[in-house]
Image (cartoon, rainbow, N blue to C red; front, side, top):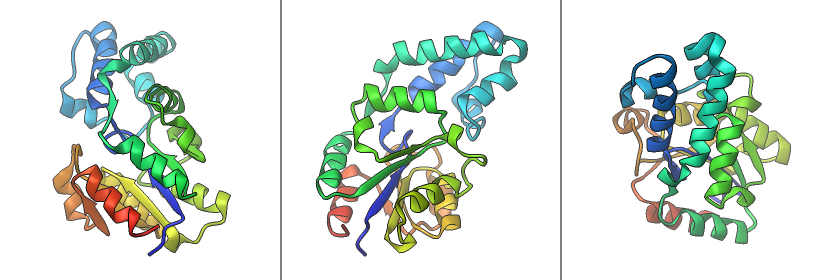
Length: 213
């Protein structure tokens, strides 16, 4: 295999952002709903973008809640970080002239905040978020947009993600899937789906990619 295009998820794949996401949602639920959600409850909401979740939660208070959510997410971004080795990996891939894309369920605003604050926004040739597709993961829509934009062969494209939705999206698109389990909230479910490749550290992923680009 010689991959020419690689698509990355953000949360749990490139970035350790779950703590920030949980805190941001609970900042809103405590104020507008009078209660805190458990991590499991917040994870169960994942799929739609932040805006869609907040609109469902807050109803007529949506616009104000949305503003407060992003203010909190931005100002508390010190709670998030890149996994060790990720920035070096992305730099190495760009040195090899690979096309890199993001396909995330996050909305565009939160995705751009994270990519810019953690200093990796410039590595990506295309950024596809939950706001840029009509159907969210596990739909293959975001993968297909990348393939079509750069006229790539599906056999030369790899999706890298940590969730069951990433595996299903990759299989639906007909591309290879590398599941990364260094911080996945659904390890067992991911393993049941029999990904093409499974990695437990950034070093393992980098070694694999160096031999297949």
